[in-house]
Amino acid sequence: MAFILKTFALFVFLSLQITKSTSFLGSTELDFEGKFVNTRDHMLITKSALISVVMEFLYSHPEYLKTRRPKDFMKIILSHQESPEMVKKTVENISPELEFINAMNEIQIANAEVDAPPTKHNAAAHFDGEEIKAGKKRLMKLKSLVISSILQEKNFEHTRQLAGNYLHTIQDFYSRSNWIELGNTILFENLTNPEYQISDDFLASRSEPTCRSCTASTGSKVKLDDCFSNLVTRKLTSGYVGGQDVTKPLQNGKCSRGGLFDSSRFLPASGGINKDSDHRVYSPHHL
Image (cartoon, rainbow, N blue to C red; front, top):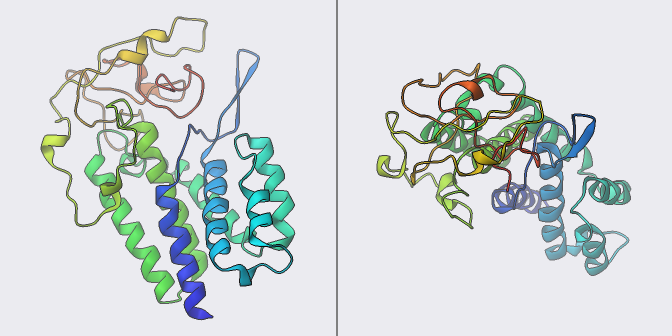
């Protein structure tokens, strides 16, 4: 039994690294000029991913299901997960039958806490400020701690805290970097491979221009569509964020994260490249 539970925990954690993500901010609804903007936030993405990978495990180990056949259970879980309302309804339907709900909530909360001080101001925790190598180093450390804690059966509450922190950072890589804009349609699997070192040739240097200036979000009704093509590099980069521990260079044409929540969006190169929400005012590069 202990071996199966360890296998289950490892399966869930490692599988979460290959689930798909869409856009996200700290809230599922944002008010802009009297209109609500819907987005999938970190917590919602994490919950959806947890449900999917746990169901995959339960399908392979039906002995953990007391009242439903795996096929019926999978049908309930994996259907209609594309909207916040349907995800919430699905989770409510299965909550009485699964004891891992509380653990899942702990992982979600730990994920969201990365957007609070002090990690809010740490560029590497979000892959901001071209801290690509530092972000990968953070992922490797957290991944090692999670796996070690599971295998040694240490404090699982702390393990879930680490897992939530890990998931937030890996989600931010795809939202804050230009990985997608470079034409990639698959995950950067080597990002979590401890044996792979990211080459300097693959990354934009600190002195290399990465963006041209475009219209920065002000909250007023301004034209924002010119920011979508503001990248000027074919190397991997990310945007700088005001108030973080890495300061945006003013003379090198560097990208900002951008959006109303980023004070660096007015500094050259103005604008931004994040994909955190489905509205250009908050996320200049939402696809």
